[in-house]
Image 1 (cartoon, rainbow, N blue to C red):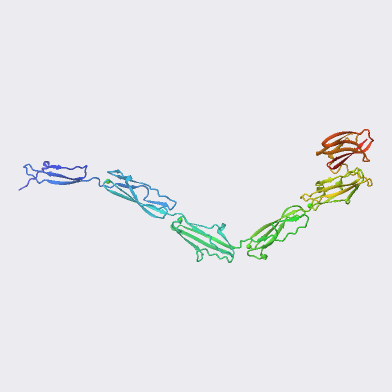
Image 2: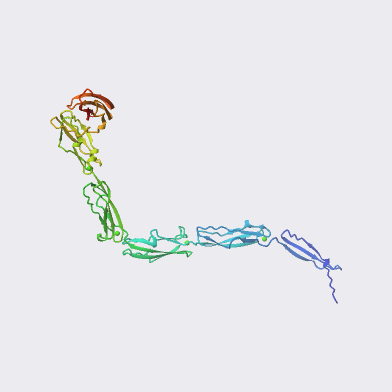
Length: 482
Ligand SMILES: [Ca+2]
Ligand SMILES: [Ca+2]
Ligand SMILES: [Ca+2]
Ligand SMILES: [Ca+2]
């Protein structure tokens, strides 16, 4: 018998409680019967409704591997994105674990994790490498051009070379290797200071990142200490002008060489005949060429006082009515300054000479040289007597005749006497004849300046003297009446 198959799908019925908006377990039941009403057993499908099973998409921005300079560098997070098909932007939900210590060389891993509402997890990692690209340094403050360090012969050698690296600090301590060759057991450069010569030392420092720096120093062992000059005098010496100058010999010592190997020379500009400040300059040079220069200051000075004496003996003998400059009788001497200068500095401290009256008078003088040395006061005695010859080798008086002037002179008997003193004082002016008799009293009183007309038209023609007494001094002016 042939079975006839007929499609009866159209007769299928189903029941369902599926809610695809809510997670859960649902059932769909399918039943069918044929046209004859024969029912087949119903079947049931279990439907699991689940929400979002896909993980978010986590994407790191920037490089997967980031490099940072140790200590000086800084790790800046390049950022990331996290997008979930269901939950949208989950960037703020991303958690980063792990850390970077920029003070420590190494490789650090940062782990980024994000999960959606259904705990679907996404992770990513980034590698941060803290590294040292800076080369170590080697320094020696005493090093000169040509990498030369001078080492004093026969001294104790101290290696002052210092290695350093940026990745060596208080926290970590020295973090490099340091190799010196040649070196001593103590690790310093091996420089023999007992003999002159050059020792070449190589310093090599390598940091943990294998950055390597090399320095070669030429240690030159020599004598660098200059000789010492002793002046054997004070630094400044005083020397009397016009005395021959023989310098005190300086002496020299050296740390290494004896005097046969050290030269000592002197140059000098000392002029003992002229006041001034001079130098003896000593130069010492040892056999290694070390030079010392030292100056002795030499001050040439005049500390001798001038002297005043008389050219004609202790007493100057003059006739009545003599008219002289008393200073002409003085002899002025000094070890350095000229008589002219001493004369310019001459002072009269006392004078009572009256040329119109017999007697023994005195004039006291003193002077000083240009260095300020004062003479002793000198007293010149003047004897005025009719027994001596009248001397008229000078018109005026001891001091400047401009203190008193007579004009016109010669005159017809009428003339003017004018006085002009430095200060007001007791003054007497009178006219005397050749015999010493006062013939006219011109003026007496406290005066400084004044002009007086004298009428002598009634007197005999001839020579007269206008005599002014002021300040204990006598001033004479010859006047002629025609
Ligand atoms: Ca998801
Ligand atoms: Ca370094
Ligand atoms: Ca020396
Ligand atoms: Ca002098």
